[in-house]
Image (tube, each protein chain N blue to C red):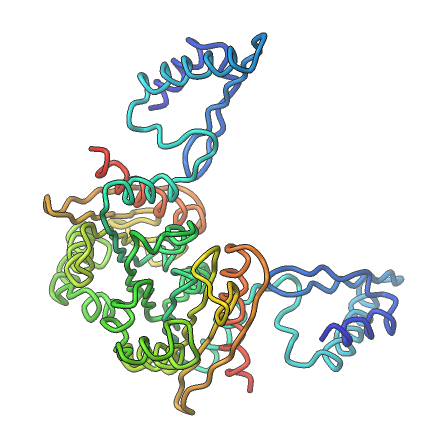
Length: 219
Length: 219
């Protein structure tokens, strides 16, 4: 992705700059044409070039937020979402519900901070947590399936990770995060290794969880 | 409270100003003494005056966050907390878990956005919701008791409200929020009528929920 960004910077001089944030990269385009219409047309051409190069990684234009994009897709497809979250502590649900009208597609979230709550609220087997650890691909998958099943929603998204500081081990460092997505297609999980502070790791986790829902919906 | 703030502004010229925020009011004190020790002593005297006038409303000094203060109190008293939240969508849990080490006192949160989830996750009777509405003192109380019971924690805090825009009625306007707190003392609820945007109402709700836990702990 870094190479692709560098390529489009070279290729298109009207891309004025990139800003890297926890939630993605802003691409700023500056166009000076003789009229607003002409400017708009040129911007659209540049957007097309960027999308061709970056593909699905482009999640919004004009400062659209990820939660807004995911919400619009869910609404369009008449699908409902539920969330199971550990290290983010409620941030994924909070970001989804920042959007007015989110009750149309968001049902509930289980914030399962303790291991007991993972078992009681989501039916994650105690033995699974003991065998693989709460921060594992297996537990992320069970959390996603658990919240999807108990809520009866179309999609269940789950995140478990080590936001730090502390609680790490050689095998499981701070920043290790697993995100699981359950749907009628079954369950899939992704592993991430984020860098940064506790706040940054939590924000990145919530962003990647929403992005996994987005990619599932457009996939 | 406004009167009390105006009084201390007049009474103490070294209070340089007040800043009102969604999460409270910052009181800035500027002192110029001949040494750091003398300055510190004068600041402590002013802090004492402010506390005498404002009492329990003072929740922290030196920019301490509410979640930090509540966390320290819970840890000190070896009590555990769980959360049930509707209009805040996970923000209360997210703010509590911003603090590293919060797993010592935070167990879980149920984000019950749909009415079905209030019944399924917290055992709030369907009839109670039908009779009083999801945004009511009765449902806030049942949510707090429900999460306390199911989690087995010492304290359960719950919030339900109308963050808007939309979904309001003459009887239940945007900004109407009920917060419930369940403990071994029983359950109590407070009604709030917040002004502002959706984001402001949600933030104020999360702040008042945390503050209700704080006041319970120091009360």
